[in-house]
Length: 355
Image (cartoon, rainbow, N blue to C red; front, side):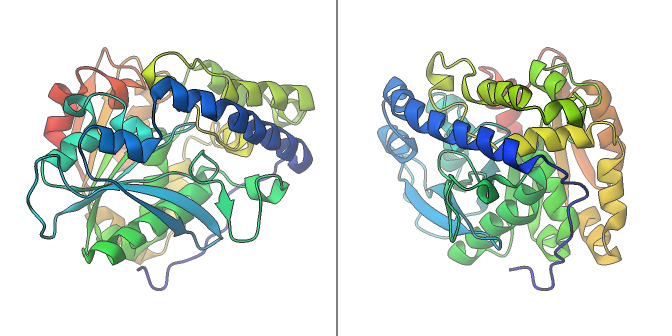
């Protein structure tokens, strides 16, 4: 899919391995205990939710270059579609702690996944390594600490790459639309910067509430991520972060599948990036000239929120000038971080514009 792709080293991954492994293992088993209850609260797992609303559903397993096996869900057609020909393909990817159900949580007239399918798109929904639907590996098990040694860097360099390549190979499409929210937007930038051939094959990159630095973020979870490394390495602190990752509010339909799992290392890697406000600028300039030129040609559309506690407007102001081919930006002063996927007015204000 992307011949000659570089395999870059992470900028920084100095983590307390034993502590993180214990906490991630705790998350894994807690999620195993909670997941049956979360399914019952909503009624169905992903594919059955799709079929319940009258849409066709397909499930695939996609293997990354470093051996993770990701669960990918597809809505190949709308409810009343008779079009059996080739359709434009779009990949939707979730943010931190989430999974692909974010795109189909509301009713069909207010869920981006369903709206795109009804509009004639071939809809694919990915899942990052370590969440409920991506707990497999070719050689590792979730009970091993090596399984959890990843962060958003690997999600961008391996997960997004594998999913996009799989979609293009499966559909025969030469290019794909990409929609990423929160951390998935950051992973999208990493993928485009790292792989020039992939950047050329992304028609448009839609970044919804993109989080690329947390310098001005005010979320409680971010507050913990800002603690010094020597504090974060303490077992009681990482255990408490683990509880935050695992026991977030689970009320109502929205949180029936949330949180879907994540590596504690991912949270701590955001701590390492936090003071490095030029992280993505540095990433950009580390790439070969071909990568930079390819990324410049990828059209990028951005949506931001004035009450976003993760993608703070001040951090957004630093990101926007770095996007070479920014074709659209819209700011909603009253929106928070979850309005991009769960907002009841998201269809009218944003989804129809994306379509």
